Image (cartoon, rainbow, N blue to C red; front, side, top):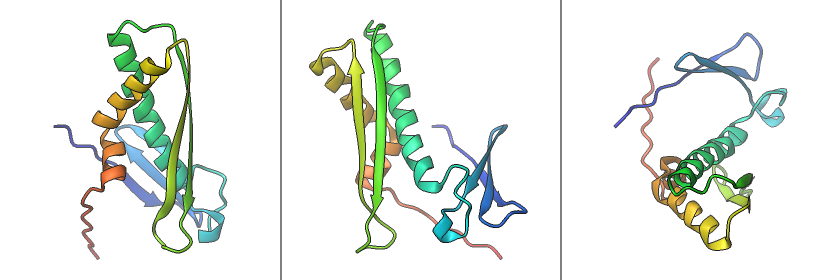
Amino acid sequence: MATIDSTSRLSAQAGRFLLNARDQHLVVDASPGRGGQGQAWQAAELLLGALQTCSHAVIDDEARRRGWLHYGLEIHAQCEADETRPGHYRYIELKYRFSGLTQAQAEELVRVFTDVCPIYGSLSRGAPVTLRVLA
């Protein structure tokens, strides 16, 4: 099983951080409420983007395996913070808009995604998180 690594660090600008994975770099901002400018991607957007990316990758791979080559897919993602439970989302929602497939085919592809995507599985069923603090 492959291990995924990334590193983040502070930038010279308050509320702005730099993420690195492999040879890729991404500028990320804290939300304005946390001192960021909100110009670059923010944490919740990255979370939704990870779900969308995994979903597209799994669905496209599975559709090609089945020979369903002429279809379209747009995924809209949304989440909302739970004001009554700090540190939690009230909901995370993915809306799939397929074209060129039947309802049954579209549902089969989404079911494959929910069965195999580790990001979806970790969010929907919970995964242990280990924190190690070094000073």
